[in-house]
Each structure stands twice: as structure tokens, then as C-alpha cells.
Amino acid sequence: MAEITFSSDERDLLTQKIQTYFEEELDHEIGMFEAQFLLDFFSKEIGPFYYNEGLHDAQALMEKTVESISDGVYELEKPVQFRR
Image (cartoon, rainbow, N blue to C red; front, side):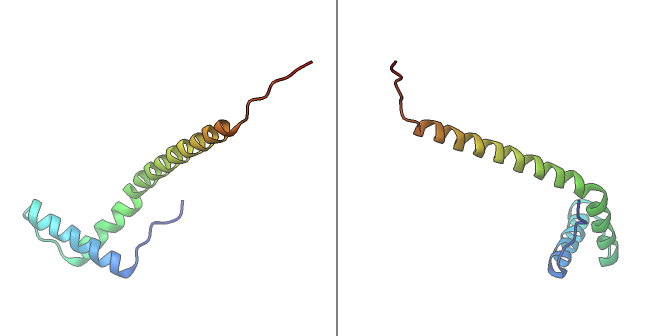
């Protein structure tokens, strides 16, 4: 799996979201660096779980799509009568 990385703008937004969460939900203020370190921790340690879940969802969708295509091809078959 490739390392999870964010653009500078995404990183800033996620850092702000972490700070806001701590302030509003935990009544605790954390600085930008603390929030960035927390983001790095979640990205490294928890991110792969979400990544893998996304892969499983994508695989299930692909299987459903392939099954639908197979059904569609089967419906295109023409009836054939064999005579001997």
C-alpha cells in the first residue's frame, strides 16, 4: 500500500478539523503541530483500515457490475434448435 499523503490544502483543512473537534467535543485546545502529529498518527496507524475497507467496497461493486454484464450478455443469446 502506498503511503497516505495529503496536499498542503487538504492537510491544513484536516488539521483545522482536528483542532475544532478537540475544542467543541472535548473542550480542549490543541495547537497546529499537535493536530498535525495526530493526523500523521491516524494516517499511518488507522488509515490502512479505511483504505482496505474502500478496496473491499470497490471489489464488491466490480463483482456486481461484472455479474450484471454477464447477465446482459446471456440475455443477448438467440435461441438455437438442433435438428438431426
